[in-house]
Length: 127
Ligand code: FES
Image (cartoon, rainbow, N blue to C red; front, side, top):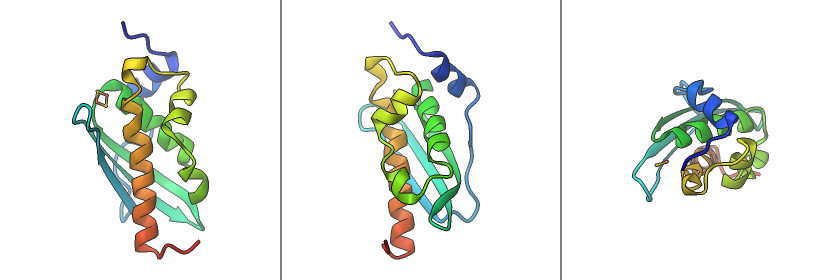
């Protein structure tokens, strides 16, 4: 039985920040080994903060909702703060996910971290 919270349904039906940031500073692409779904997150960084963030997810509804929530959580955060966003914090911000869908939240947090690592690589690991 899948019981999705209102927030999951909202982010699934009206996903925020869908698409691709033009001339992105960092891009993260990850696949979910459990189901083969994929997602891509692109970010623009200004003064060490995530100024713009977009995602494309080829995945289930929970993956789309968690991707959408992740972009909302990460927007405006410093790079270091965004690195602290975990699968658990995304699931919590969505008022939880059904246990059999927890693996779907891996994609978004991992994609975000991959995009940040890509940014750091391109712009000197710096701080
Ligand atoms: Fe693949 Fe949810 S079933 S991410």
